[in-house]
Image (tube, rainbow over all chains, first blue to last red; front, side, top):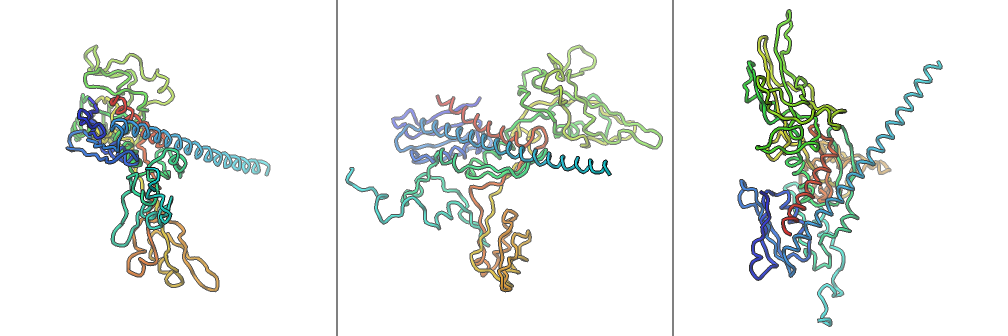
Length: 122
Length: 366
């Protein structure tokens, strides 16, 4: 069963924690590390996969003050917003492309039938 | 504290922009003759603090700079440019496309008869690889303890007998279009009332499959070869799965990206040298340009075609004339679908899966 555990938060210092994410790999680990590194509140972030045959990512996060848990939550939210934007832009680009292609096919169709018309008159 | 000036406020420090050499290192991979350099992206938000440049990620900036340009979409493959995004995310999309977007694939094969030379297990493995034209979004995952029903299983039968007719041999090779979809579910075992599947409703009565019947994406995949007298009789059960578990569920032949090449002439290249540069490039990136007065120059006409073979920067004097680079935040993304879903749908599905991953962890943290 997939789970996320936070280690280190039971001590006094809640600005530094290790999050253990199961059933995840480099796909999320690296993307999350990138987003967190870009956050000015983060003092350190890194991730490791302790053993290749175990589906687990350990994400170490140390902040400059706010709770590590909150910073991670913000990063996840940022990534979701970012992905949604990519999706919207991509769908729009595909739609535009298909509209232009559709126009091109239509104009080819018209000129084709025009030629046919000429032949009949002759 | 107020009266103490901050370092970034000092007048002699450049503010708000990076010096040209750092900007080059930040945005480009420089491919010299010996090795590429500045290959990683600068991720730390405070990396350029001393220059008063904020390297953090702001959603508004991202939205302003991010662009997608579709180059082509065909039935099964597409190419598009993704500009203004880091490799960490582009790579996440690519990895998800290969390993985590679900499709339907044959998982169980019940063999009633197989007298062909191809062994049962090899035949079953071949059947597993056959791409199936069925939208996986209409199906659910089947767990081991769950019964096969119309929501989680697709059943095909294959019943072929090879015969000799005069000097012709019928069914000498078994092709994938001979797999027959059984929308009512399994017909096996033949001698009992209880079958391997328990379909509540015939799948061809479901609105999503009435117009587009389920079949192999390609009609002409050779599954086995037979000689007269040999026969195959079997039933295949296809279920939903992901490429991480077995590559047969991967929805793409490949999903790949490359960074946009940039070719810059750093010196005046003229006449014979220009001719040599044009002939050096095996993919024809450069064109001869007429400078007037009988002089010939060179222009970078097709930088997108550059494979970064580095033939044009080989040799000491050439390294000074040409600079080869790749843009770190400009990805040429290519998706080749195996046919279950169109490539553009696969990409949007991949993004949704990444969002779901974030949501899952967010839920578990609260």
